[in-house]
Length: 420
Image (cartoon, rainbow, N blue to C red):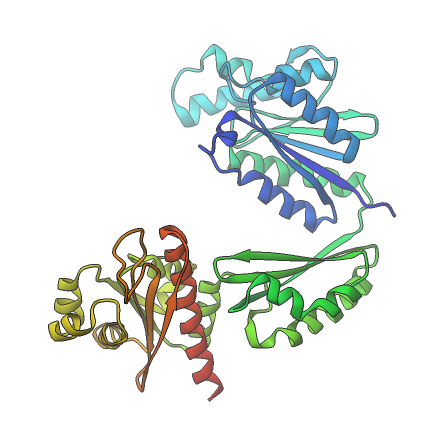
């Protein structure tokens, strides 16, 4: 059985200038992987006819399925539909079911007159199969050429997802005999990518060609992802688990999770398992730790709140940091963050607390405390533990690195207490 490949083409100047983040490609790739389709390329092009045609010509050389999003709206810059009509040698014709749906949409939902531009949304190339869009006015279109399929969908994410789920994925499952694509991911912290690679080199060298190992570093953490391709799912999983378990054992000292999960979700799961709670006291991170913890669905079960104490006045008035401590040791000190952690845990009545204070830059550093100096404290009902970091990055990355270090320090304390 041959591996089936797909390419994703996203269209729009807004993607190239960074005004809009392309989330469509990531979602599409995830769905294709679930069906055993490997994504060969992800290409972003602007609203330019020559660039779009070049992308279509190039991607059909590499892939069996070419999925296109964007450029199907009613305005002049939406050029995908007439371009595809010309590319596949068709003529625009009225698709009555789409027109009926659009009319009904304007009369019943929008409750306003339909313009001529919206009427033209129902025009489609006569060389395509129309994929009805029940979430908007632009239908999807499926073309066939040289045993390849091309599917054009709106760039609006909820419309694209509906067409994918209602039409495209069922079509792929019906018409393609796919293999299996399986992924397994480890999350590590406290070790750099190059050191991690040295540590697992012999395992990596032994992995067969149909299983690929990827390193995914980000802000003090590295994910190790194994991706396997095959025709027998159970055989593939058995083989994948063999190498995955070898990696787990080798990196056990730095292992955070044996699944593809965010660090804040790992902390949340640990707290839920033990029916415990956490609070945060944040200075240099401005509430970002609390934001990440609370971004996980169900976080209200374990996250009580945060005190953002950016100024010394707030540290004293709300977190009971003595003025003498601030004067003698400074806001960025072991003594200050220890008091911050102990106070917020007591005031918000939580089982755990995490506190941070640091100098993120680009200014504010001194000889004794240069930019990048960070103190982190975690507390439970018996103790407060502290750790210092000297981060060498710019302001944004220093903040992100501090957040990751704080969450991981908290995770370690929870695990330590859990293991007794």
